[in-house]
Length: 194
Image 1: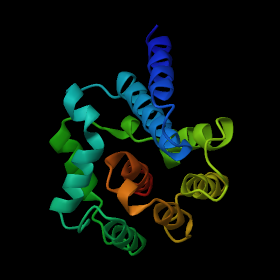
Image 2 (image 1 turned 135 degrees about the vertical axis):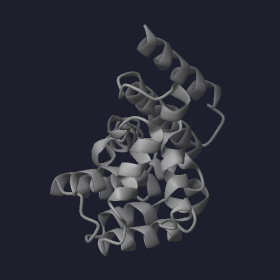
Image 3 (image 1 turned 45 degrees about the vertical axis):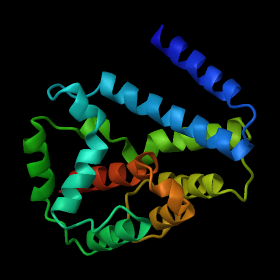
């Protein structure tokens, strides 16, 4: 029943926005898809912790990274600098253990592996709905995610993750919804490479 209601809401949003251009519709559909994906993860997610914390887990991780000095700011350059620290193993693995302790639960299930939520949503917008062209930034992000998925490895030394990041326009990157992918990958990477 809940899935049916979510689909009806998505259809209403898209139909109400019918006067907008296709890229605007693609953005709106992507945002609705991502919110649904993360809402589903929260529903089946980890025991412990309150709902507000679970809903804001990405913002909390980002703030913890900023507070510790690993993330200088939430721009694309700030994230690229963070990627370089990860490549050089400059992030203390205890940081993530402390994050779990502060939360009072392990948020691991709230972070999809290698951008599964994003890949599904970019795929929906780019391939199934044909809302954007192959020259669009959304298509470029999706191609980079495909390359990461094909390799089957979380590797900050290849350019796929940086390419995905650089494909997102700066004004879009200001929205947390577009930074969640990178926070997912960072959390998963450090929890698999302990």
